[in-house]
Image (cartoon, rainbow, N blue to C red; front, side, top):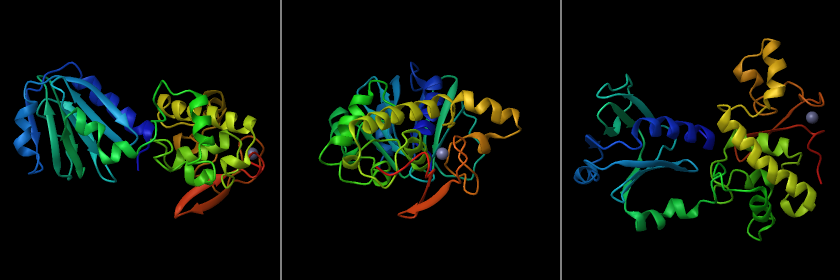
Length: 274
Ligand SMILES: [Zn+2]
């Protein structure tokens, strides 16, 4: 399942084709939405926002197309009227003069006005988006210290979209490794210095993954790995999906754990318990 950085990168591709452009033709395929498609004709796209794994296509008439891809949804951008070759079923197509954006297989699609966006049951449950550029480390630290979150394990917290939106399985392991914390500790077990370090790592690793297309290892660490012949899946992460290998920092064997059926990776040396 794509995580915040992958969703944001997809949004960037769509924004490049649609933002500032008027809708020349619109197809909303779900029967409940079809009567609304004429509302978007001629409207100009003002932004493609993301909130965690949800995408918000904003129009200058105050309407927002909300879509959540769940497991199977996928956006494509092509030249006008050149649908991609795919066996998936079309849900939405947005056509400008020169480009088309196609959404396939997503089940959660709604057309909302501003009030409905602000009251949306999924969006109102979400915490701040980890890729929101205004977010500062102190905001994350305060959230870790919040009564709602401080007694839960970091492993549980860092997949909870109400804590922070946009973090998924690989970012969880990579952030906790970079923050030097043991995933089964709780925020309340950590001193202020550790909380501050974790808060910084949360933003740094997420932003790096967005900037470097899913790579969470620093660019200076990637260079020698590439030189040694490693390919993207091998050099991409510090610990995630690297069972049977050793820590890039201290050479200790990487441990794999399962938390509610989802894999978590850690270095017991770099991530000692509090
Ligand atoms: Zn280590």
